[in-house]
Image (cartoon, one colour):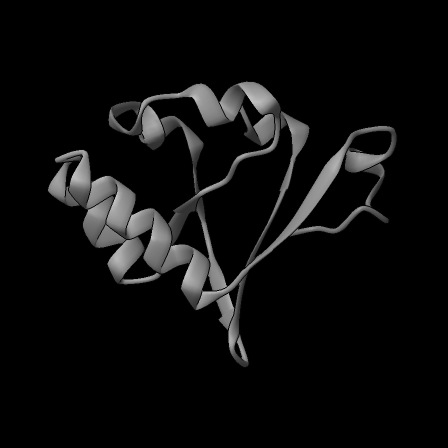
Length: 90
C-alpha cells in the first residue's frame, strides 16, 4: 500500500487507526450480544478485520450493518492498525 507521500493520495484524507485487544474484545461482545453474523464476529475474533468508526454517524449504524465499517487490520507488537484513504470508507 502506498503512503500519503504518493502522488495518488495528495490532497486526500488518509487514516491511520490504532486499536487495542481490549477494543476489539468490546466490539466482539457487542456483535455477539446483537446476534450479528458469524462471519463478522469471526473476522474480529481472528483479528483480520475491525469496524472503524470515523464519523459520528458511524456510531449510529446498527451492528447488523457493521460490514460496511470493516477494514482489514494488521498487528505490530501489541497493537492492531489499519491505513486507508477517504476513498476506502463509506
